[in-house]
Length: 112
Length: 118
Image 1 (cartoon, each protein chain N blue to C red):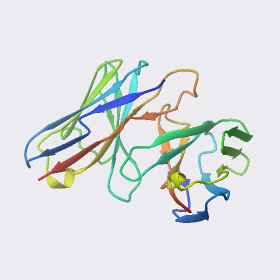
Image 2: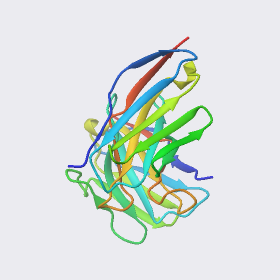
Image 3: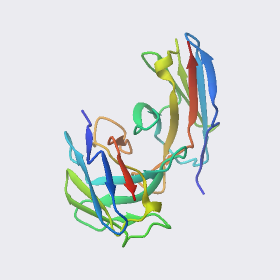
Image 4: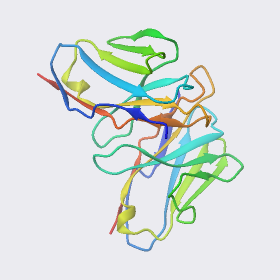
């Protein structure tokens, strides 16, 4: 069973701090890694994707990938209360093109 | 770009009736679309993969005769919940992905349809 693991949280950080969200995956053949943000009662929204080892930055968001350790993370700098949401890590299923394997999500709370 | 729409956004129906949900890719063509359901406080559960021009592929445990999927064109997939019962009440979300310039497995989600069966 291919899995994606996330700490469900909640992860609570003060406004302006860096929030660090982590994810591990079991499918060694996975090549594409995604972070989605889901506000309560809404559908997931794609924040970032990464497929090369290292860091990828987009505004206040940085995705980090370490394929050897099967580890993906998302850093949110200067966290804002509007960042409060559930963050889903998703990994492509290497044996089934098109499908994504989702983690349970980490709930982030940014306190003013 | 990469906008996915769903209709309706919410629906309330009586037990035993059927409900059709539409999923459209607005600015790209999608040979594959996905249907998920999500119960409160739970993660996404993939129900089926919708393939244009062929039969949908259902995940284990999902009743194909209850959740009918039709992928009629490269921009439209429909999910029909037949003979709906209160336990089918959930948040149904579709997704699709353009071919480029994002990775091939990228999925963009529609806004979801909240189904309540009385």
